[in-house]
Amino acid sequence: MEAQRVTVARDGKDVSGQVMVRLLGPGDRPILELLALHNAAFDVDGRGAPQRVLKPAAAEAYLADPAILHWVAEQDGEVVGDLVCHVQRLSAQDQFELMLYDIGVRATHRRRGIGRRLVAAMNAWMADHRVTTVWVLADNPGAERFYGACGFQRDEPQPVAMSRTTVPAVTP
Ligand SMILES: CC(C)(COP(=O)(O)OP(=O)(O)OC[C@H]1O[C@@H](n2cnc3c(N)ncnc32)[C@H](O)[C@@H]1OP(=O)(O)O)[C@@H](O)C(=O)NCCC(=O)NCCS
Image 1 (cartoon, rainbow, N blue to C red):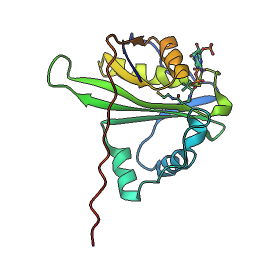
Image 2: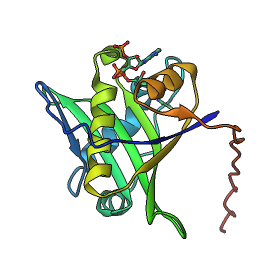
Image 3: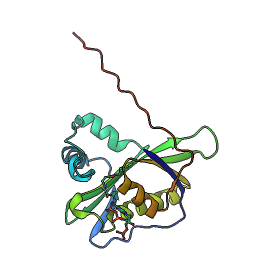
């Protein structure tokens, strides 16, 4: 995994034609469900699988959470891309930074500028909210080149991504 970090300029208001980019909000549960079920279409070729759909209350809590920024790109009523950022509160330096948690464009719609459009919406949000730093873990070479094209730079030294998943206790 390669961590990348960027300080963005004030650019990128959405000036969409056919492709519309918007933030998800209350009532967008069907879109979360679609993205979960069609996860593979938005992931690297050969990776990704249907995800478990959130229960209605959990999905509404996600959509109402101000620390979650979930943009979708829509074309002719179809979701063609999405970008999820987490707003992280800091204990020093700036008050907040963004973690770019995930981005995906439908495999059938790649290299048409949709990824850039999603990042432009994020840049506009950052400018509006005076958040200057966004970071991401790029987990494949195509994504690294895409982030590079969007102004991200490789962090040096590279951190090592680690995680742990705890098996929940079985309740009788
Ligand atoms: C990464 C991704 C979101 C890019 O979306 P996209 O809509 O195809 O990107 P854009 O068309 O806006 O590309 C903008 C620029 O990024 C660069 N770029 C994008 N994808 C690239 C690739 N696979 N290889 C090399 N450069 C790439 C190019 O410079 C491109 O400009 P160009 O097409 O004029 O040459 C898309 O490929 C995707 O969904 N990949 C699978 C999921 C994934 O890897 N997510 C990131 C996980 S960390």
